[in-house]
Image (cartoon, rainbow, N blue to C red; front, side, top):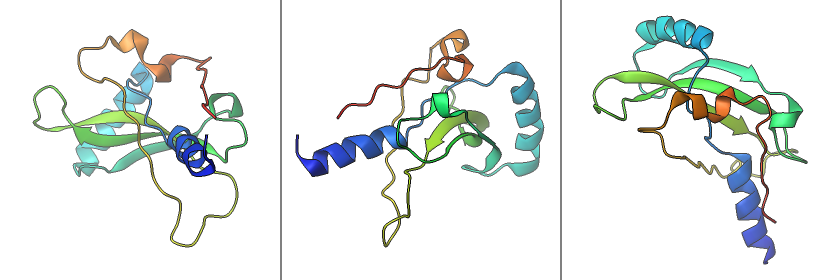
Length: 126
């Protein structure tokens, strides 16, 4: 595998939107924050994640809650979660490239959400 392809795949894994549902207590807080924000993409909450939920050799990882478009009705804003994993080290000139990966989000049971798994495992392809 070429070095550039390996870097792209690693970056894809490092910056991934993988969380779908919120725990009930966070959802209530997010509902209040949603009423105060009302702008698409607004970050409502940010919390550091334990190293076990990150990737080997990566920088810090965060769970964010932000406002997105309702995926069912396409009307209104809803709070959603994502994992943001930053690369380790100093950013190159112009900043890090951003790669986002999304899994299916409509019609999936909340009990299956990655953000509800305390033992989320991450597969890194090299």
